[in-house]
Image (cartoon, rainbow, N blue to C red; front, side, top):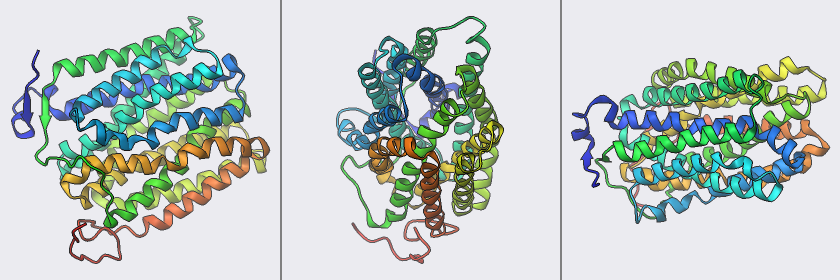
Length: 411
């Protein structure tokens, strides 16, 4: 069956459910069904199945982040396939590997299946971010991406809610839950491949490595975001299991609260970014994360209890949801043809620290968990200083407060 190719202008006459924005919404819902379930069960699964400690969990996340570091390989794949095709294939790979995760309950098996699922996740995220910036009108981007974040949070919330309600009630196994969630994501990917035409963005994308001097602040912010986020993703949830003895349904309930708040807040955040600008949003994000990571350290320094830890986890995740302001900042300063290759380059930069940081900090965690969160606070502080360099109204030639509207140089 030959799938037609339509321009974005032609696609506007399709039924709403077949338009590009709806496909972005659908994929935004499909990805968390598999990934959120994997995340919710992960810490308990690896501890029960393979006796993981902080050292092994650090190595697991280092392996998981290798495909993110190699996301620049997307540029090579775009020589032979369209971005939309790659997004659907990567989404299907994520679903398929999630479905079989529990079949490999050993250190080697867990690391291998994690690597494969991570290829699907990171390549999907790389291309998906590029498609968002190409398919969504710049004026409506913060609000629309805010809705995409909300839909992803809603899908995660449904997945977590079902785990909370059914895990103990029906005495579910890891194999059943992973199989159902991954299978559903795979089914949605197959539907997306068959039900939608290929959408043609107005600006052809460069298909080679792009690294421009005028994007330097964006690159630095991506690097710091990747380093800082790894500490949250790897160790904040692990702390709830290791220090406070959270079980699967309790970890999932915490995630459920997280995503419920994000589902409600994300559209308002999108509106706020559109109104107040990326500079204000990123200053708020990094300042808030600085305070939260210092408070995480207080859990170990001062012996604060589980309610403080759970509250900080929710606040932490809320601040992280503001990170889409970095996407719209780049959309405003980028040459249109740079979006796809720069998305791949930025994803690689975002994961430079992610390749070595979890494993290294796994050893530090065994000695001093508070020191791990202290390091995260330092990274958030540096990010805050960098955010102050973003102009109120960024555009090509005015990427930082130092540029002052200088003409864009040929690079």
